[in-house]
Length: 328
Image 1 (tube, rainbow, N blue to C red):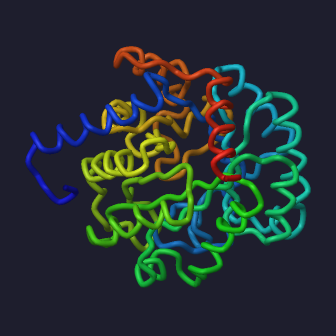
Image 2 (cartoon, rainbow, N blue to C red):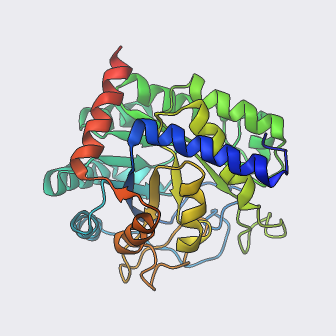
């Protein structure tokens, strides 16, 4: 199905995916606020703009700034706060307590669940995140082809990365797994990744199309076709009908949202408040300062499609059901 090019077959795939989503989620779509609070990173991933050796301007937000941004996102109507950073050694080795204090404050002040995407952290740090009640640990393998992984995530350990998310799940956190397309993978690699996401028990599964980044070794690659991404979203929806599957605003901005939702996604990620000094990841500036990545803009598109943003309580009810499944 992923390799077929018949438009009628593709539309049928999307139609089936939408019906599967509707059976579990009705017309509700979840909204995630995104706070990329440090663009410093120790890694040198070949696909990433924020790789260590790229000579770019970087920032590291203070705890007070992070909390204020999270509060503003909560007031705008998001269902979750996604705290993301590069593998910043300041936080990883010197002051991980600061990350924990921020999470605690955000949970207390907003009442919203938190997803943390800190890269690979130690078992002890994962235990502390879990003890704090952090709901989600996001860590993307990008591919489950080990040889391709080694070309993308240079000098990183495949098993160490996999262990971190499995350990987080063992400690009671929900896990998000993700892959990239357009980076040299085969259709067989994609199929293996979709299956592996199920095997590791990921409750949120994502796919993102590769965007070539200035200053990176893969700068000359062609931007991946979003049609393949949308087909993968649909297949994942049929494979895992009750999973959370994101439609990221970080690839094609707000204009790419409808197509991804139409393919079966049920989460809008990378909602970023304007004028907060924040960047996206794959598209570091697209639609950010113009206010294109807001709850207001995303909600207008959903309503045009006959869909509705979910409430905070509806999202918490979903998480409660998923955690019950994890315990059994």
